[in-house]
Length: 256
Ligand SMILES: Nc1nc2c(ncn2[C@@H]2O[C@H](COP(=O)(O)OP(=O)(O)O)[C@@H](O)[C@H]2O)c(=O)[nH]1
Ligand SMILES: [Mg+2]
Image 1 (cartoon, rainbow, N blue to C red):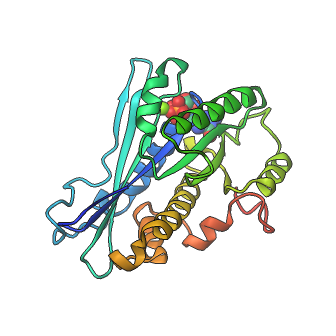
Image 2: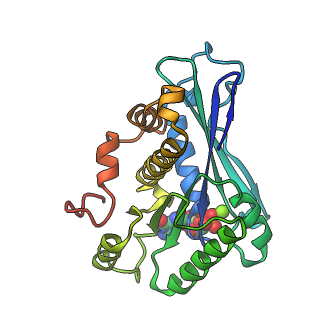
């Protein structure tokens, strides 16, 4: 996170991490498509904002190899202004490249992350890759003197539409044991994408606010931030409903 005093602007970095082909880029594409479903992509920009307001909020930057795989990172900027109109929150959503050879890139992209979404592939055959990637994430964080216990984290089990995936029951049990929110998704069609993102923003904001007293200093409260973000990504339900779709809650099966 960093803060610019003039104009008052907070920049939050969120990173989607996980093994190659688990659906990280698909999550960003899903968010991006939702943004453009709202007011032709104009987001909440009204032209009266601070000078630093991007002229094209929500433009998705992808750097891909010839085979369409993420080369270095994908980045999606989102932004949000408080009701008082005197502060701005910019959210930069990054993905890392999943292929084993890009270890150095992953570490670089991870640096300074305020919150992480770990995108796991639900296929039973990919359980090992998920575990390896998670272990690498832990190692990388350690190198920054950080740890998965310090960085806000949500977990997404993607590709729920495929055969031979870990069962709903297994994921529910795993989610109940997990300290982190766990979401199911079919990112390629946009299912679970908004839930995961809002869940990530929720845990990230809570921690930043606790550490830096942001709500008080910037006059942005959590409900306002999340509602603004949900609006910007054209979420199909209110924030609390999206959050309640996490797995392992009493109310299960709420998500398609
Ligand atoms: N069946 C299915 N395919 C998916 C899903 N999410 C992503 N994919 C496909 O998996 C491949 C890799 O996805 P991508 O988002 O590029 O993965 P990344 O390497 O983690 O960025 C692509 O062909 C996607 O269309 C999903 O939920 N279900
Ligand atoms: Mg990718």
